[in-house]
Image 1: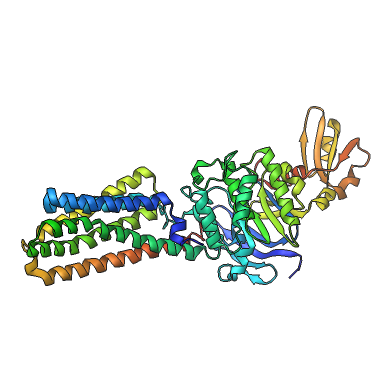
Image 2 (image 1 turned 180 degrees about the horizontal axis):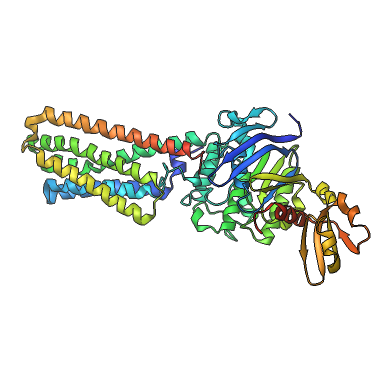
Length: 299
Length: 221
């Protein structure tokens, strides 16, 4: 067991009618924010549900915090108590009120801080300019506000790892920025705090992402620290007449009337010597799109 | 101080509506017995299950369904399962309590206005049958309605079915009943025991079905 991984999973597989999740090895590094990136249907939610114990019909083994197996997730309160999870929609019952969510949280989680929950609700402006309204029903909240409520609920607990499914998607740009701040504060709030979130909003979340895992068709196709990935790949731009020469070397490529822009492995850059090209460091967004394009079923 | 799982799981409005329903039927039972006679009990028998099944929509609708994704929050806790089971169990008891209390007005009216002890004993024996019939039909309907996450329109239809079932059973029983049931006290008590036992068994099935639905929702959602 590597001490630096908060969750380690081996040979995880789950088969659906037209889809198979197959992950021989998965490690969630401790003390970092990890982004799970992939197109729709890549298996991100399934993986997150497996790791949080919400889905239990899979094959494989999981080790939590270096000492608990997946069999203990429902028997040993320490496992789920240390994992904070936020889902997408359908996380809370629509008829529940904010007050009920607060009451239920304190009943089902040992370390739930009521004052912190109220403070977070206020900081995230869940009730707008109004005061804390415990009678507000979940179905009366917008999708973005529901996500904020989930964040307030999970951050009011004392956890060691946050696992979030698409937290940024329903949020406005300002709130996405706040989400990055919350994630960073969470990681800095104690030793070995880790965050794992799935996202399609790669650009917005790039500032907070330390480690990235890219999934396609149920498999992890790329992963690594963002800084390492930015050294592994390189953006190449060049003239139209060189397109055919660079095509076999580039990882992915898009053409315009003026030339091409593509991504190649930095180790292959020597093969482009002599061509009139410009290189630049890729963003996580560009790396993710290139990797997804390479492995996607979308033509 | 922490609330009980039932109080946390259900909203204040849900619980107040149960209380209003019970008080309303105590009043209806009382007035109906005084002004229109024993047939008033049919109103209670039809009305209580109808309203209880309808109110269920606001707390436990689809609770036995494997597709109850909405419970992700509860499922993310180790204590979530026991919390859900406790809330379920209390709800079943509360509903049965509402049914028993709902007939109280009818009993009070019989006690106050009909001093003939033989007639009162007849009414009491009849109630022994009507009570478990209402409990039984409510629990049967809840098993069905909780298996599917219903829309409100379908839930209303289910309520009517429950109500009709309860009334038909009650009328069938009344039809088969001799005029002076007190002459057949033993038979009436045996009937009560059988129907009550059935009602309890169906109540246990209702509880287990919901628990099974929760447990199986950890698999293919």
